[in-house]
Image (cartoon, rainbow, N blue to C red; front, side, top):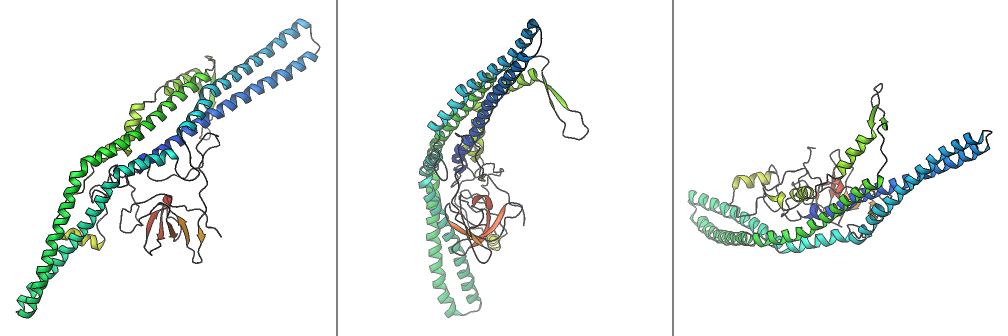
Length: 439
């Protein structure tokens, strides 16, 4: 099977706002990994402090029992204080991480991001609702326009057939048949004119509504942009606090060594001071404006710069013939065959991830095991994310519907399935709960 190229939908396309809404949860999960890392460092600092304290207690007891001159023994015991100081240092770092990183992160997440028991968070659901409300009237108009376009194309084909039959009867000098076909031709011509006018009117309504639709979608996107801005600001703030908390004492002779991956190669040594300075510089390098611009360019209004808006399309006999033969590729849902935003979809494929152990990390709740084994090797599965088909051989998926899975996914991640109405086709496996079928 040829490789399917996944495309990033244009923001203004029907459902094109989904990646922008999904980024709310994806971004918070990424922040959760950062919180997890900070929490692990805090625990490591405490463990190290306890190891130093154990070292000090053990050697204090041993040195106290040895036979040695008192002044010498006292000097030896003084050396143990180095470990005590080190333990105090690591405990202070742990306390600083907890106070300035772990606790603020936990509080901020609880106030900002409410994870629902199943599915997206409340924040993502609310943002999706705003997008759908902004797109609702446009979607209805667009679907009506597509319906009227198809009716117009069908009427064009019917009128052409009637005209050919009428002309053939005249050539055969069959006046009776020609008269009958003349009436049929007039009927189909009138129907064609009516449907042409309906399609033209609907297309003009889309043109008239476009500016209002774009304004509503942009307003909805501003809310998502503000959420992302706050998340990036908090992430940058916590990383800065984390680096300050570590505040390790520096020594020009401190180095660490990494073993080479290749057999026989020499290990690589790194100066601690240079490394920490480099890390500190990188902690200050988060450019919020740049990251928000990337968000807008890949998932927001700016990704629709080259989108082709729906407009009146004269009947193209060659294009229709190619469509019937299955040789023409489907295009952007709302923009026609040339409206695809050709970019590798980094966000539209829902990545099934298991949340880390961090107690404030957004946990991925277990999906209900709804798969039921079928005697023919098939099984039913629930659609987790909606999918708009890009080719005629694909299935259109609606979130929450049940479909039959007909075999295992191929190496490109596509699987064959059948809907409840008997329609068969391909679908991306990531969009469907593909867990083990229940016995």
